[in-house]
Length: 247
Ligand SMILES: C[S@@+](CC[C@H](N)C(=O)[O-])C[C@H]1O[C@@H](n2cnc3c(N)ncnc32)[C@H](O)[C@@H]1O
Image 1: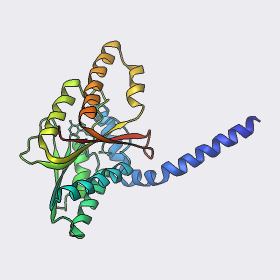
Image 2 (image 1 turned 180 degrees about the vertical axis):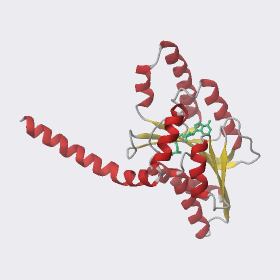
Image 3 (image 1 turned 45 degrees about the horizontal axis):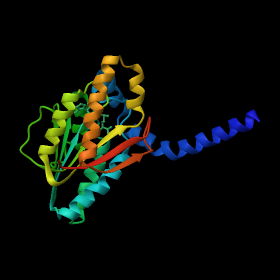
């Protein structure tokens, strides 16, 4: 009886891993694991994880990008990725935008990657430096200034990390609203479970600050959100993807 249960459990786990892991493990190795881990070791609070976000997230976001292009009849797309890391998602966005140009759906695009961590910038330069449509900026998004407006803005910033306060989330959020075009879409991710689990290791004071910050994120989703998806194929836990319109 005991062994039958263990066998069933192992089979279930095997089935789950074969569904979720292989593609992501290959992507993960390809995405310069060592660099990502090095950056996360150096500044875990800002990076928030040891694993690059799954490309399934970028595939889902790309579907929304196509919808924005179609509904606003865009001939040029201005795309901003905040917290590009080593570029695992950026590569998918670059491919999608290139395809749109090749298929004559759009005439041109600009992909701007803003990343705080200098270690990752080197990798981004190696991956995208030869593409004149990609601009790489090594700066804190809160301090970055631009005159441009963006049709699609993606953020993978780890809001739940202690690196972000109630005020910084508010500040970044207002900036995003300022630079998003009126037909534009803003999408951000949030690891499932992390918010709840991190409460267990916080002091009372930290829990209060965390709750204030959660409120900002939840209000933002309530006011501006139009779609949400949970992507199961992500390491180490499934990840929420939110889609928002301009405020
Ligand atoms: C969860 S990682 C995601 C990395 C990458 N986009 C991926 O999909 O794997 C968050 C990234 O945001 C960057 N970051 C954190 N705070 C930032 C800020 N204020 N401005 C710009 N980038 C920031 C981190 O250095 C890290 O690369």
